[in-house]
Image (cartoon, rainbow, N blue to C red; front, side, top):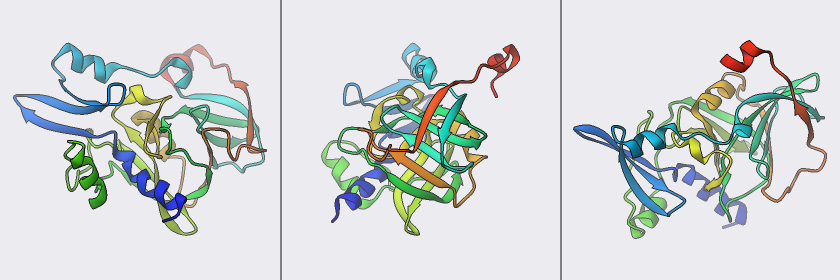
Length: 240
């Protein structure tokens, strides 16, 4: 198995955002806490549950319009894993910048791909090898998880293809917005659900995706950000 294939297989762990929801009077959510490497069960009705659902990433990772120098055509997606930013190139020196979460140590990668498939509220089928591996760690994965708010792939998914084949890497949403700006996935690119919905509507199948690695691999000549575009008060209050 090549190193690329190993990374790609691990990329299906996009889903290691693992969230299992159970009904027990009040809804409880079982989340894997990467900070403590342990499972946490929290009810939405408890202070802890509310804190988890309300935690937001740092302000610098909020969606914003920026000036950008790049030779990439409008419609291209650029992911800078080292800075935890995803850019949608708009043309005329402008881009929308989104905060993202990227692969943890050992799962970073770089390269050029394209969007081969798109899905709204995608389902998730973990591979048998992953199910067996996680079971040994005491984590029980479902054979299939239907799409919805509890699904680790979030509200939308863009499936990245390389050479006409599914790379097993994804750009997808997350129900753990506090992980944006951090290295926590198994190779996939995660976004806040509201951001991946915004991006999804702008990126058709076949769109080019350029990923810069965690140590800057593949960054030469790709882009240079020239600063944030100032917005008026209305845009600042209600978003764009």
